[in-house]
Image (cartoon, rainbow, N blue to C red; front, side, top):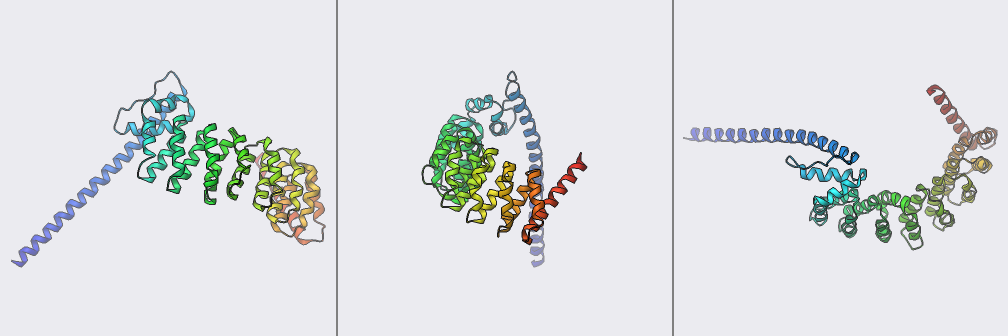
Amino acid sequence: MELRLLLGATLLLAAVDAISLSFLLLHHAISRYFRRYRHTRLQQLRRRVIEAAADPGQPLPRPEKPFDRIWLGEICAQFAFLSPRLTRYLEEEGYLDRLIRETRSPLWWRRVKACTLLGLSRSARALPPIAACLSDPFPAVRLKALESLGLLGTREAAETVAGALPAFPPAALPWLRAALLPLARAYPEVLRSCLQNPLPLSTAKAVLESLGLARDRQSLPLLLAHLRHPEAELRLSSARALGYLEEKQYWVHLLPALEDPRWEVRAQAARSLGRLGQAEAAPALASKLTDPAFWVRANAARALASLGEAGEAELLAALSLPDPFARDAARAALQQKSLRREAEDERF
């Protein structure tokens, strides 16, 4: 009797294992088929959307197969920058309304995805729901909303970002830069007005550097004012932004920064002078080859190497200086320049 029970239990367990294994294999096969189908279908839909965006006479694709409605909305949002037709398509077909509802989803990752697609959609209707997400309890949603406002690129989005800047902590600096750069290129005056009010240190740095990367020449007085700011980090960001402007005549404004008490500011000023490429700055940079800070000497030597004959003459003269650190910096810069020339000769 006991043997029969044991045998029955063993057979039952074997049957359960076989059924479980069958379900696992079936699940694996279905998942693999779905992934392959999804990849192929997404490629087809992307190609058709891009072709329709490039050719106004070609109709936009319509949902034909399962999941097409979801995937079409995401693809049209991703490529909305190609044509206003895609933005109108999102609005007319109800995709935009679905994304707006998703910003109120209880799941934070859905709110993040909705903010991303709304920003990519370039629709004016996307601004209020994205702005509402700036007060979301989850940091990831707030940061994605900030980045999406930058993607919208409208004046209203720029003003919304400007109003929300004081609320973002230092950890948000990468997202701030991603959001501020397109807005600084389109509406620099909005960002310039932000610096008239108190801002967190990291936020003010991001604004200054964004204005420099956007090459906003009208922000020069603002950058010069922050070059004399009591905070060393703001002086450093201003020196970096002046280099981003790439206007050679601004080199004279960086000379006082070479005498800054903080070595980080002196090093950045030397680097920005090298970026501007004005040969008249060579004597001032040569005087920094004897600076007590390594990075100031290194950046000054590299900057001199980028100034052509005037900088090379200063580096050669530095090889006879009594300071061994200055000689090492000049020698390293000359060697790098020589290697660069050899690489260019081999290339051409």
